[in-house]
Length: 399
Ligand code: SAH
Image: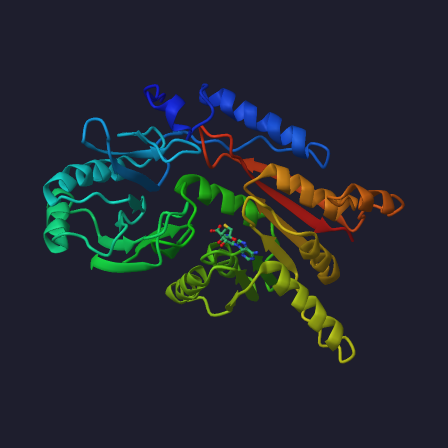
């Protein structure tokens, strides 16, 4: 079950835990205990049976080696523009790595060097997307290049040319042209079908995502309930909640493209009782409580029974949780990819601790929030060999 030791480990930096998998899980449990142990008991982390080649999205940077003149592909050394050549990786999808190596060989014949190549491979539908990113709009003899790539890899289902003239950390630029296929791929997750475009966020570890979402939703009481899915991305969790009998689901997401995909995903899965809004999650939930205050007189309040939030690594905001308190949902499901900001947010919501010391002093006499109890903290290992750990926290309103 153990893969060969990675020869790029030190220079690449993509993985940080050079130890047996069992020890990695123990390391992550200790981290969870340190940051979240004060709130509640922590369930044993859900690990992977085969913790390798789980990344279904792979990207590689390309450049010409100054010394040898050869084209290399790999990852940027941290804090530099130097590329560490990486030809194969223990955590990346094998097919994606193969395709990247083929493109590297083709570049010589076609006399161009992409800035990046991005590959997404669905393990359930087997659809494969290849995105070739160049700095200028010119991709020399692109039809021949497309045909040559398809000849070597007939399993590719779509090829996209993306143009990124900017020197930022972002891999993709604003313009793209579809060279072959539909311009997106689909993945099956817990019985639903989801569209993945070049730009939209989609969890990269399929096996563990199914476990994560199952954990998040299995103890939620959704039948006939109104659910808010905050930071909803392409709508995955909200759509799954709708299939589990929720009466109405409201999704909110900042990225316009993700919202577009979310709307299509709902249609594709024949879900009619879900609505998506393109907004900042905090602004949106604040507006919801404001309009409730307005309509209090005529008893026209919008009740939210379940709040699900899945924010990025920075976590959520104090204002978001103030609004949650005002809405008083029966259940809160917090899915977090960063236990530090999760701990900070729970400290604010449950213990009234804010980030500034002065406020804490002022709040000293404030009682803790007795309204909500944590019923479960469940860590899931979505990113073996890295220090990242995902956590589901379930909170219920005390009767
Ligand atoms: N729940 C989704 C996506 C989680 S990733 C899934 O499981 O697939 C976090 C998402 O939050 C991203 O899609 C990101 O675009 C979005 N986001 C980041 N900041 C936000 C904000 N301030 N308001 C709303 N959404 C935000």
